[in-house]
Length: 518
Image 1 (spheres, one colour):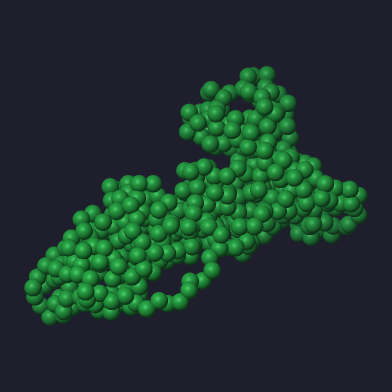
Image 2: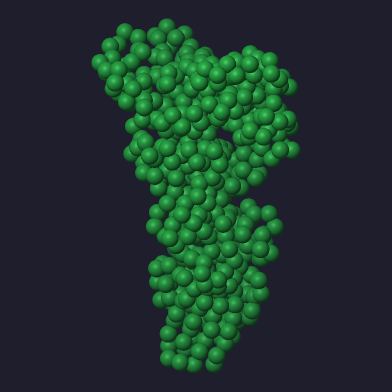
């Protein structure tokens, strides 16, 4: 008996999903099972697993030659996402299951026929719905994640037998696998680990550092990048870790983007709700370029920069990072995305993050300290801080010095500083003012303002920008720096509730770029 059938699945390249026709054909020749259409090694190894899953479910695959074609053939396919679609199409070709039309099948199969969750369900279902395939069948553990996509009609099943019965197969021969025991405990919904569900650190715990607190508030209000330079123990890391707590919750569009990245990069089946809190990533200074920006063999995976999308990317001890790795962030800092090219495919991931850099002033860290001697030579100091390139620093809106905290400041202010919740309310009000002003221009925050807006409808008067003209004439400010000072000035105006920045705002914004010596 010969037969032909077709089901649907989704191939992911980065966060972009493409519909894949899973065609099955049964011939008259000797037994064989071929999968064609540019499958990777993991997909090629699925043949024996799928035969066993179908046999243990009670509907074995045809003993004749079975050819499965994944169309389009030029699109790379990887992983176990196609298991369920292949088995259903093969059983439909054998006449054991009725055709299911435009239904999309996304799940891995175990040898006993159990459906196992896979990563990337959220972007895959989003792609299916955009292509007009609203009916999606997934593993039970992926059901909550798949249902986050508006417009999707999701079926979640525990095993292949349930899928086939729902598709109209004869239920009599179907076997269901024995329960595998209780599932492991899950973390809080939408989090990557249990710690993510706990309250973040409070800004009230930071003693002193009035300038650092102000810079943190400005960075949060406008989405600006921040550089902090100071001796060890001055509170740079404490400040950076408290920045996410000042940021407002993500709106629906941003939450969907962030959750899609986490779905692709996290553990399968753990994403159960939209990620509403801005993420925080703090890679070690030994991080490689693929780990920071994304990469790996085959189709590139997202790196720390994309995992920090709509959140904070913190590089502690920034001069200790490989200069080429850190300089690779210059492109995503401007464009808000990372493009990774490989011979097999190119992937683009979102990377609109706030960059926070922390650095010591010299190799020993004691330069500028109180009562401590720095033994570093002037050449060593220049070489150490010179590991951060000028073009990178030019993209940092706020650059501040963080002095060592005295005992008096520590004793007087510990536990009595302004709390995160209080500062976050001012940040939320400033963000609301930006949203009202910028939504018609397709921009979220002041940090994303381009030259066309800053030289057009949002251009301050000549009297307001006079300090910038003088700084550029002296060679102290580049054209990019000019724009970034104006962005910070708009944020200062938003925090004060003014409709536009004044000369004082511009002077303050310019001062925040001059605290760190070049």
